[in-house]
Structures are given as C-alpha cells and as structure tokens.
Image (cartoon, rainbow over all chains, first blue to last red; front, top):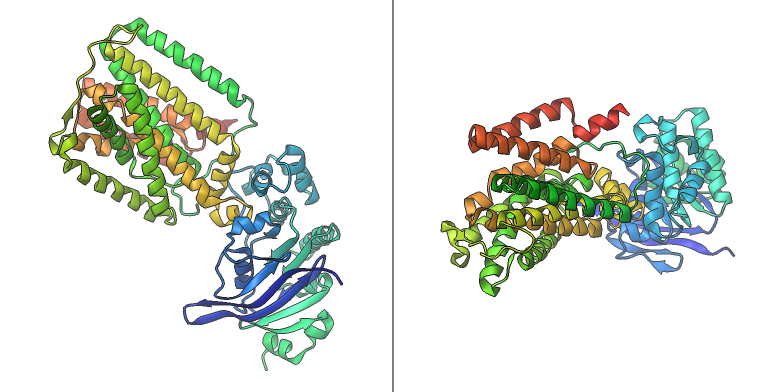
Length: 237
Length: 326
C-alpha cells in the first residue's frame, strides 16, 4: 500500500461563531492526484490555509509525512515540502521572474539556490524565456505558471493548487493541467482545489467534496459527482 | 508588505561587483574623502561634511527596514537620539571616548531595534508606523525626565583637548570618523541588499504571506532588519554631542531627523543602497546651504517641497529615474 503523505484528523476552524471547517477527515497518499471541490464558502481555501499554516486550526491535527504539523509556521511547513499556490497570483512584484524563483530556492534549503536550478524551475513551466522580465509584464496564465514555478522550487512532496485555473481560457487551462500532470509524474502529490469541473475530472484520481465545512463525499470522481448530496450542493434541491 | 506606502521598484540589473570588492572600494572612497577634507582644512567644511554624512548613515539605516523590508519607521529620531544620549550616558558613567561610545550606542540602538521588532512587527502598514512614532514620544519623555543625562536642560560634552594623530583639529577627526561610519553603513546596506537576506526582505516587502509560503521566515528577517537598522541609526546619532558640544531632547528628538530619514531614501530611491546616499547628499547639502544663506527654519520647507515634487514626478526616486531610462 502506498504511504500516506497527509492525514487530516478532525480538523476544525471557526471564525467567530461561524464554523468554516468541522471535523474534517482526509487522507492523501504519495503520488496521488486528489481533487477537492465544493461550492463557494464550503471551506476549501480555509482547509488550504490551515494546512499551509496561514491560519491556526482550532480542532484536530494534520500529519504530514508522519510528522505532526501543529505549531509549525508556514515557512517551516514549506521547508518540509508542503507547497501551495494562491487563488489570485501573488508574485513578488519588485523582483524579476527569476528572482521570484530564487526566493524559495534560497530559503527552503531543499535545493541549491543556483541560477541553473532557478532556470530549471522556470523551464519546467515554460517561463525560461522571461526570466529577466518583471511580473507586471506577464499575462494571467504566465503569472499562474510563475506561482507553480515558485512552488516547484520548494521541490515539494505535496502541492496544493488552489484554483490555479480560475479565469483562464480553455487552452490556458490545458497548459496548466499539462504542467500539473508533469509535476505529478515527477513524484509530487497534488491536491487540486478547483471550480473548473472539466479540469478536476480530467486530473483527479480521487475526489473529495466539501459542503459547509464538512466532507460529504470522497471516492472515485464519477461516482462522487453522481451522488445526490453532491448534486444538491451544487444545483440545489 | 502589501500596505507599504513605498511602491516596489523593478530589481537591479545583474550584480557585478562582489561584496569583498565593494568593501575594498568603500575603504578606498573613505580614505580619499578623508584626504580631500583634510585638504580643505576648514572647520566649517568639516562641520558641513559631518552634518551631511550623519544623514547618509541615518538614511541608509532607515532604508534597511523601510526600503528593503517595506516597514515605514517614523521613529528614526528616537534611535538617532538614543545614539546621542548613549554617548552622553556612557561617556559620563564610564569615562569613555568617542569611539567606544559609538560602539555602545550601536549596541543600544540594536537592542532597541530588536525590542521594537518584538513588540511591533505583528503590526503592519500605518499601525506599525504609528507604533514607531509612539516609541519616539515615549523615549523623549524618559530622556526629558532623566536628570543624569541633563533632562530637559540638555547636556554639555566637552571635546577632548588632544586630537588623535594625524588630525589637526577635533572637527577634522570627527569628520573622518563620520566618513568611516557612512562608508561602513553603506557597505553593510549593500551587502544586505545583495545577499540572501536582501532577497528575503524584498519578498516579504512585496507579499508576506507569499514569502512565508516560499519558505521565508518573515518574522526572523524583520527582527534582523529592525536590529541592524536600529543599530545604524543610533550610530548616526552617537557623534552628535561631540559635533555640537551640546545635546538636548528637543533637538535630538527633532522632527527634522524623523522627516529626513524618510524623505532622503524616498527621494534617492528605496530599492538600492545608492538611493539613500544620493537623497542624503542632495537634501542635507541643500539644507546646509539654506541654513547658512537663509535660515535653518527653511530646512523642513525644502524637504517638504522636494518630497512633493519627487512623489509626483519620480515615485521610485532618482535611482528609479535612471533605471527607468535604461
């Protein structure tokens, strides 16, 4: 049986009286492609933020590669191989494209921060030709690719791609999908959080569905998407 | 940081000169400056150069936190005055001369910077700026009520009669010390800027959450920046009691230091070590010229006018203007 990379046990997060996540149980295995879907406000991004260490969770615990993540800050989780991208691209606007990638290389310590390695990361997302450009000169899809390059520079064991395809055209979605498939083939476990259903169904080996902070389904994508509670969550009764 | 008032400037061109070479070049510049000033041999030239150079140190120091990390510190005067009063206090308590007092002032400023960092770095944007402004007010109140360093009356510091070789006047020696401090602080700033630390500070200036996600220990880096910045700002103020032979709270904590420390890097450009140097030389020289030709009361008016022009016409400062043309 493949090793479990990530285990969420009873994870809960509240904002005041509002429970954004409740008793979330989830297991992700090494090399797996997991799709995490749910309507707006279902807790997907809260899950990402709790896992990445941006928010503390109130209940439960995450175990990553057999170690608990409690008390670890975002940068410590990144150094352990847990990478994320942001819903809206958040490049370091004052740094060139290559310097954007040099930041995780210099700080995560999983790879030497050499120019060659930085170019390799950019090359893997087809941005090598724009290494010395500034982020403001990039298109939306290139910014998404830069986000991915920065995440891959951490040489992550697990990547959470948070709506990496939002707002992109059909062809651009295919580009990002291709990159994610390549990353996964190279050994990175990926959790794809997405609203673009075509991408999720094409990419995911397994699908988990969140509704109002609770997991309502988890399994084979076709089976999950045909479940009445999932249809109800998206389409209403 | 996202709320930073200073817009990020495109990165510098590929780096050519190594740290060692820059430090050597800096030492050579320091030596040349000292020799050139010795050539003048004029007390006013020494005073004016010391005045300008203290602002080079102050602006460079401010820029390490304000420019590189994007945390706008309105409390520069507190650190500057802490340096000046450290000289007074340690000089009086331990009977030390200028150089050991400068080292102790740097340590005091570094500790203050570290403490300020611990207390305030979870604050961002305007909240951080206001907290640093409060620090200045608190420290001034303490000094005003601390009679050991003269309280509100101020303290006199007598320059030693013996002037270290090879200087003929104490003003010349003080100026040479300031040259060394200015060149050293610029070299420190450039080393930080071109190092892994500078890369991390630039990342957190642009987006703290994204920097954390990229593995940057943002809190630790900010503490390093506040400590180094604080130490250098105090270093800038340490020779002040010897320069004027007198120091009192209203002038040491004066608005001019706080405003100049911010305006000089903004006018020169905050993204590079050269910006604060250009801004400080330009503004401090203008102010010195205004002081002797019009009145020192015109100083802040000049800073305000120049700042307004630059904020409107060149938001990335003089360095930004040149980079934009390349």
